[in-house]
Image (cartoon, rainbow, N blue to C red; front, side, top):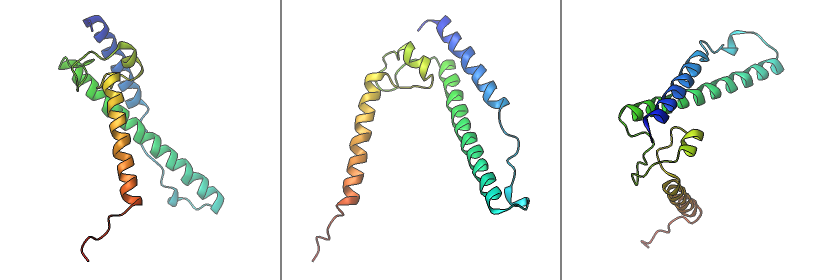
Amino acid sequence: MDKDKIEIFRTRIKARINELKAKRPTHVMNVSDIPLDDAEHASRESERYVTITLSEKKRKELSALEVVLKRIEEETFGICNRCGDDISEARLEVNPHSVLCMPCQRIEEIREGIRKRKRQDASFYPQRDTQL
């Protein structure tokens, strides 16, 4: 990928990082401090849960974007961690923190599916005690 394209990604990523940092909630209200009826308490607790969940997603995105900036600085941005081929610009446009090209990502998803099925099978068919 040429340096101009990488610079465009760097600019976009820094802008998104600044946006996420600006939108961080400074304080999540403790619902238990306010006397409320049961319905209001449940509603506020639900709002608090949504706020915390969104904050966690933003924190994860922020962390991933900071890794992308590090990859840009190390000149490894856009290069597949597994095979070393270029990651397509279209893929990076959608998901700038991609570290695998599409073929390697597909292989990883297949492997994860196999691991998941093995875990499910193991829990469904517990190993029998072979010592009698």
